Length: 72
Image 1 (cartoon, one colour):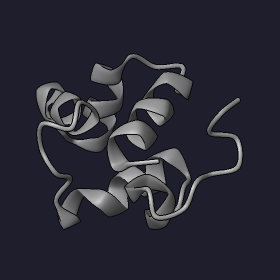
Image 2 (cartoon, rainbow, N blue to C red; image 1 turned 135 degrees about the horizontal axis):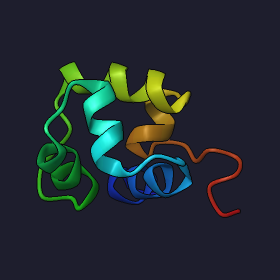
Image 3 (cartoon, rainbow, N blue to C red; image 1 turned 90 degrees about the vertical axis):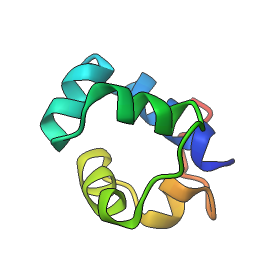
């Protein structure tokens, strides 16, 4: 999986709308959307907060390893 796919899956699994996730992370909703759509690469400074929020590793977020329930 790619970062794009992983972030989209994580956002879909979350019970909150993407704009609320962005607010909790201190991001503008359009920035989170651009990351999820693959329009922008996630900068290093945003990787750790995203990983903490979604409770995944950096490798899972960035697509270097898949999380176990990504296809569920």
